[in-house]
Image (cartoon, rainbow, N blue to C red; front, side, top):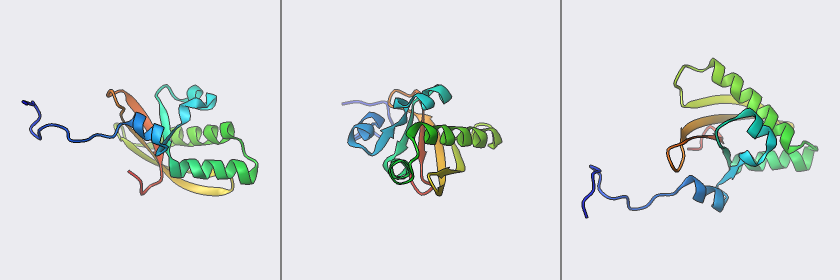
Length: 123
């Protein structure tokens, strides 16, 4: 089989949709606050999601409030970032814990722009 890629055929790929279905990523676009803040789909890693759930369960916070805080702080970090920067680092309080996070903008499964919130050591 011929291919136009200099690397040959794709052997295996793992899509964003599969990662959400598997629970590796959590689709935050299910929250009204996220849809109000962002026009692109937003997801977070399962480790970030665990921090959010912990704040809700242990500290009486609500999901919408946490999504609002993350969105506002991320937008402020974007404004301070260099133009065209695809990875934005920021710090936000989730529950009672201060968390260092990073926001990545990149192509989704069909090359549309998507946002992913993760811990600094995650890819």
